[in-house]
Length: 241
Image 1 (cartoon, rainbow, N blue to C red):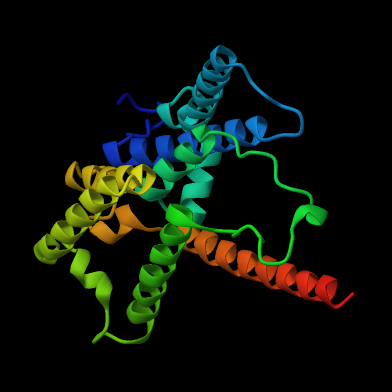
Image 2 (cartoon, rainbow, N blue to C red):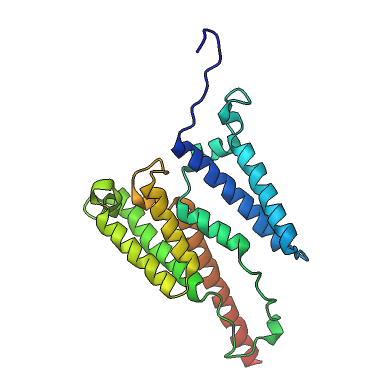
């Protein structure tokens, strides 16, 4: 580097993965929101085109200054990464799967819900996925913060990760056999990201979970529980009339 020239920021594979993951999540989130907007039914060809354009724009805006085209300044993705950390591979796969899932059918009107026929708010893979994230994430957080004896996070380090790797492999195969393809693909992606050392952290737990995924699962279960309680209360009031 010549004297007086501006320093060039080197992008490592872990940096590239972290920024690309944020770009993918942003593009998939916008695409999913557009698909689910009021009155929006995108034709398949237009949907693929829009998804590609969103991904390219998001990826370009995520890495452009980092590559030196804008003086080495920080991008939005770098700022988000500095504040919130890296996204897990599980989060990336689940957001992309949500964006491309078939749109849900129209929900019945409240008057159409008869006593004893209320529609379950969460069922199947959606419920078990949230429960698994919450049941795994909070013990990890509390054990890591409160005590060393129950620190499950240590099980994900390179030297001690083999039992956890085998457990995740069995879990992914079981999910695939049960038809829970979102969960199976998310687990497989986490193992691949960890095995290829794409994550800045060498701990397998960081490829499987992140704070945003845990907060989403916890908040979703709490919200669904409140909705279910409200629906049961509404049904009881109708039966009393």
